[in-house]
Image 1 (cartoon, rainbow, N blue to C red):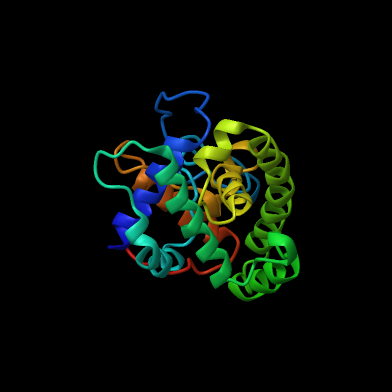
Image 2 (cartoon, one colour):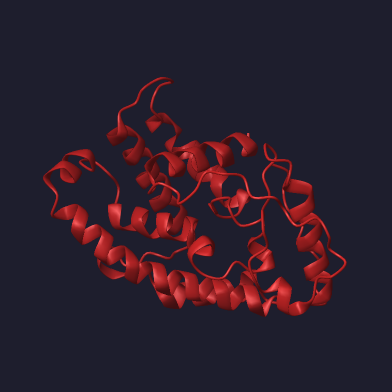
Length: 218
């Protein structure tokens, strides 16, 4: 179930996000023996091309709540897809109490949540806060452009707080446009890079003296 939710969310993001600069597969770096703290804090070939949609356990509840809004198989109506995803994202942020006044992102709650989530992982805590701070500002410009577009207004009619969806989409490829440290490394099963990236990530956690967080299988 979790695997389906995770994959479906990624597919939606791919479908509605901006076209990627390149679709060619990048070969993953296979050696983990030469990893250093400096290399762990930077992009690793083949491990930074996947979109980030959040932690798997956070997705399940909201997916179940809003699954009735899922478009039928073969339905190519972009509006329906956006309405589902916007309500799904709103649910995620409500769950974390990240929604502030006037539908903004409450950075105080983001920071408090980061303190709990990444108590013993300071780099991830800092990254999480910086990502939200950047994307809440970036989303304002994107959302204002959408509001000025008659076509976008039609597509987004009935959507749940579209601004929050813009924040979520910004975060999904934040690591591709900024630094991609080891805790964002994710390989692809289809490209055969999943195990190599996971091994490299585990090595970097050890270099930082951190026990690799347990993840639910997806």
